[in-house]
Structure formats: C-alpha cells, structure tokens
Image (cartoon, rainbow, N blue to C red; front, side):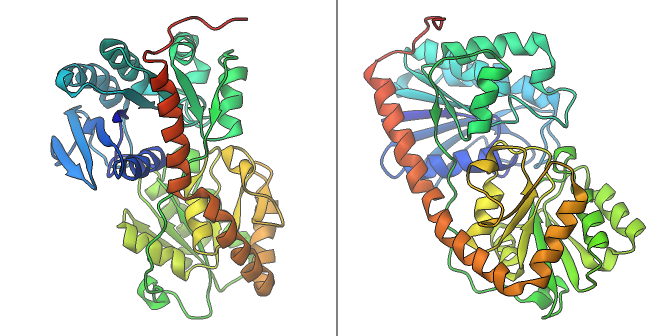
Amino acid sequence: MKILFCNYEYPPLGGGGGVAMAALAKELAQRHDVTVLTSRALELPSESIEDGVRILRVPVLFRRQLAVANFPSMLAYVPMAALRGMSLKRQRYDVVNTHFVVPTGPVGQVLASYYGVPNVLSVHGGDLFDPSKRSSPHRHAWLRGPIRRMLRAASAVVGQSRNTLEHVKRIYGVTRSTELIPLGITRPPSIERGARGDFGLSVDAFVLVTVGRLVARKSTSQLVRALKASNRSNTHLLVVGDGPDAAAVQNAAAEAGVSDRVHLLGHVSDEQKYRALSVADAFVSTSQHEGFGLVFLEAMAFGLPIICYDHGGQTDFLATGRTGHLIRLNDLDAFTQAICDLHDHRQATVEIGRHNRQLVEDYFIDHCARRYEALFEAACATNAPSMKPESH
C-alpha cells in the first residue's frame, strides 16, 4: 500500500502522539510505501527520509519550541499541509491516516476526498479532552460541532484506549462503530545500564523517574510535594523532559527544600532517557489525564512499577497491586503513601517490575502495526471513504 500519514507533529516536535505515530510509520515502512505530512519548525529540513519513511514538513512559522505547539502554528498547519498534500497527485495514495482530529482532522479529510481514498482517523485523547486547558475542544461548542462531523465522515475511527472512545460517544455524541487499537512502543535497545553517579545519585538511593513534557496537564510540581511528604531522605526524583513548567518545578523543589534530590535533565536523547529509566526504582506521574500513556509502557519495559492517577487510557493496562499503584485523581496523600510502600518493600517492587516486563510484550509496535495494517486493507477494500451520515 501507499500510505499517507497526516500529523501536525512528528519527532523531534511534540510529545507521545507523534512518537507513537512515528514508530507506526517506521514499522509499516518495512512493507509499504509511507509518507508523512507534518510541520516544519526551527532548523528541521523540509523533506527527509528516516528509516524508510518519507517526511514532508510544511512551514508553520510561529512555532518556537520543540516540545509545545501554540495555536498560531496549529492553525497555520491546516492550509499549508492541505496545499502541500494536493501537490502530491502523482503519488496515488491508497489510504490516508489522520492523527489528532484537532488540528490535523481537516487536512486528512480534505486530502482523502481530493484523492478519493479512505480516511482512517486516529484520535489520541488530548485532541478530544484535556482538563488542564481552557482551549480544550470539549469546552467549546464551536469546536465540538466540526469535530463531530469529522468523526462521522471518516472511513474508520481509531482510539488508543477505552477512555478516548468513551469521549467520542459521551462528549461528541458520535455512536458509530470504532476501533480500539492500543498504541505501541519501539522495543528499547539493549543498552548498558546507566551509572547512578552520572545523574548525581548514590548507589543506595531510591530513585523515582518521570518522563514527559513539563506542561500544566502533567502537574509535575505535585511529584515534588509527594517526594517531600514521603519523608524518605534517600529518595530522589529524575525529571526527563522540558517545557514551560520547568521553572515552576524548580521553584517547588526550592520551596520544599529538596532541590538536591530533584534532578531536572531537560530534553534529552532517547539513549539518555533509557539510561535514566535503567537507574530508577519506580516510575511516577501526576498527569491529570493521558489518552493512553506511552511513557508507562516504556517504564514497564525497564521493569519499573508505576505510580500514577486513575484518570485516562492507562487504566486499560495498569492495575493496583499488579503493575504498581493507581491512585484516585489528585489524592496526593495516597500517592505519597504509594511511594513509601515501594520504598519500604523493595522485594515487592522488584516482583512488580518483573511482571511489568512480561506484560509490556503485548504493547510493542509490531502488534500495533499489524492491526493498523489490517484496518487499512479493509478500508481500501471499500475503495472510497464513507461520507454518509451515521444512522440513529
């Protein structure tokens, strides 16, 4: 097949949704002709080939950060990508796979219609519901209407978790058939275990790690407060990632008197991220909502127990007692107690980590790619996207 992926973010731009789609594109490129239509920002090239994937980047002009998009850059992507996509007429694509209904949805819908091919729409969670943002589409009727129409018009709708697909029905009133395909991660390479000294850690430290963009939705400053409240003086926190909340996390650590135990690593390479995971004892996240939570799977691949809140798609594969601790949203006392439990019961922590290594085998990218491949083939069999309104 000739597959056109549309996504306003692609690594190194953006977060987990782009990373997941990139892994999918690279896996499918081993068997198919794959093109990605995405944004160009900073010093990124306008066109490149990476691991067999042709990447076309359209200029959005307004983006200034790798980790975080802004509204002008997302708005600019829509017409620029649509125009660039229409110029690819000789490619004769078989299927369009659109990632994120906002802002990418209109691009995929227009191009699928233009080429007369199916449009498989993948929603990632934050494009439908983000409780930390006033601009979240679920809060605005003027956005809910167009999103509803795009969900209904797509040839197929894919969600990566039950939580995301529930939002399709409950918030947007779309009762059509949908597909649940969990996201997949690339199997981490076999790397030499990192040295704790490289991160300013002692051999006997109990090390918590978190990975992700430092944005409001992640509420990373809560982790600092939990670290302080745990009253375990040998507990340290590695923070992998960067973003607009970095200063707030630093300030929270200073106010709590734990700056020497909170280590902000900033934006790092995948290799350095893996080394940080390899020296940790547990993975922690106070994110207010995750559409799926790829970072949890990455941590599980390194044999780490997970402590996080129970709000989001991660509830599909995480469970208290088996994978770590699922805590009621914003119950920081319970979160702190979970840290203490793992700290004080090291053997149980090791056993949970061993279980997580086994569980994550079902979530590597080859499984995800096979299911998308079958869906694309089924959509192509219809030879055109369905533009009929859903029945009630």
